[in-house]
Image (tube, rainbow, N blue to C red; front, side):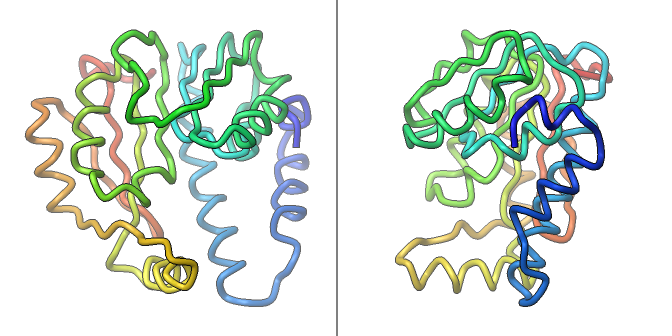
Length: 214
């Protein structure tokens, strides 16, 4: 779905999810859809906050979820992903969502966060696959200048166990996390952050200077 389509309203968003997850049968497809719907709602709430004009998406994937969450065009979106095809797809999906859309192919761990003036920094579905997730999370919290939203898999839920089994069959490991571990990482950064969970993930929300809003 294009960024322009995402601005069309709830109908366009519903249409996106219907096309992305067409089957209503099977536990995993239903869980994948619910997970992405919940994630979209969190991102959309942050984007509604006054002042969110520049977005940095670390590990952007195909960009479609972010496009569905943007309800009005922003000034700038920077997309970073290790896969060139993802960056190209995300740029196409978000072309109508910002005055400027930049794509960067590379490892999010190498991106110079400290030099980027983003109002909202997203790192979603990235730490799931990084064995050094603690170091990456600490660095991202320490260097992000705008509001930061990061998610991590919630290992105490059925969703995580099903995903872990599914990915293991493809030779891919899935990070295991718990709230206590995440809290210890945040404490080491010396910054304040809100940690909360839903049915699928733990989230770390860190705002600059304790301000309310982006």
